[in-house]
Length: 400
Image 1: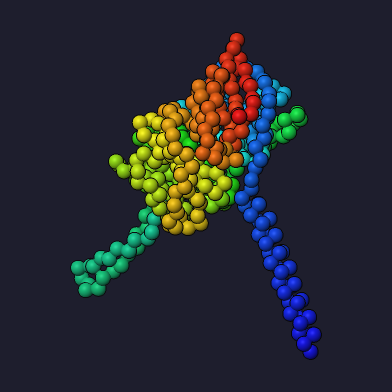
Image 2: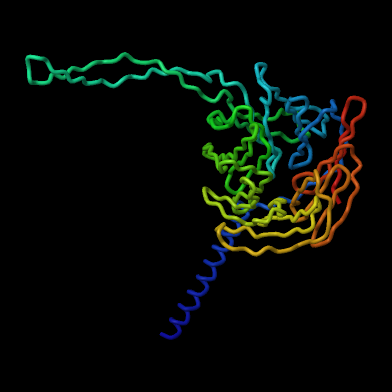
């Protein structure tokens, strides 16, 4: 009997260990899908693009396509074949700022999303409003009883004023750059941003792969909108009255949105999840630098100098108190600068002359030689542009 009990106990323990192993492996695989780690791809490449008025340069995940705008026309250029493979102009009857409003490459493949605005052909529509029947009570002189009569009114034609702009979301999927297949341009026909403000310009766009949420800041005159678009094509406004958002970042692991927010004279960094908000910093010198691999990167800027970088761990509960972890202190010029949080956790701060790479508390300075210089979103690639003879020479090389 003791031998049977011992055998039963041994097999029970083995069964539990196997279950824990299976659950642990399943959890690991699910976490890889929800929180993918993308190894940066680098390339050494030279190409010549026709034209010199290139704006909003963005390079694809595999470093083989370049997206840009030229004189209001959106274009995608195959760097290996040195040709434009896609372009989209504003409609002929477009107003100022219409056409492709904003775009962004996805972090894991050569595909991008973009927003396109055009005139609404049905900005003013009419509807027939059926009136309700009205009962009128009257009393004759020879009677003490009241007579009730029903008067039927005629239907009314009323005008409805819709948004004069139609703003739609598109997905552009590029084939392998060594192939001749044109990109697949797909319209999300069921997604029209009804609340996109007419005349508004997209200041910034961030995309959460964890939650499939897109966030836009749209400026129209002195008014700014913060729009959230989800995978179910729902669009909602998240900004507070009078709020100005100077920068934002989204967590790649929790889907939390972080804002540099100013309302009146109050500057704050806030975390936003659904309708909830939590203040992270009330110091006007603190700014958002970016978010990568479960960490929010914050900077301290004093007199146009970046003097400190700290990280804050992303948490599921945005109200949970989290300590800041200082990772670097020093002084870097921080005026008209761009910041990229690299895939390997490096912080790249650069302008058109110099790039500063901060990694593991150490800083490296690199001189930039192009007339215009850009760093890829994974912090791995440098894109140098030089204008010559009506064209733009592009040189790609690893940033190191």
